[in-house]
Image (tube, rainbow, N blue to C red):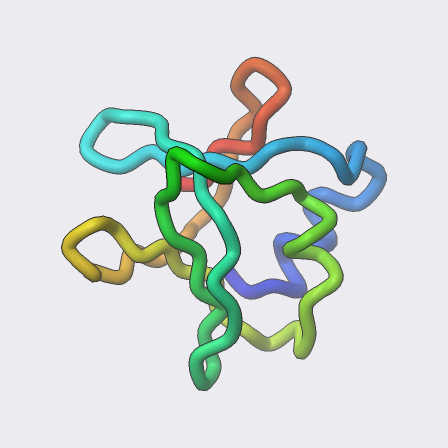
Length: 90
């Protein structure tokens, strides 16, 4: 999912919504790592959970959102769903 599409899809949502990811049938909190080339990289992190505001303030909008797991594998984000007021990326 491109950052521009994510911003459009989440427009109007509370920016303090927490972010998580579903990997291997488990929902895990994520934090923003930053930009790596044309990627916006997030990673699983049980100690810190990013908020929507941290992602939507990133630029440029052409960045592809990916999540890095504990094995350093990058997983593309295709969308999200709302679970218990959190945005679960998948």
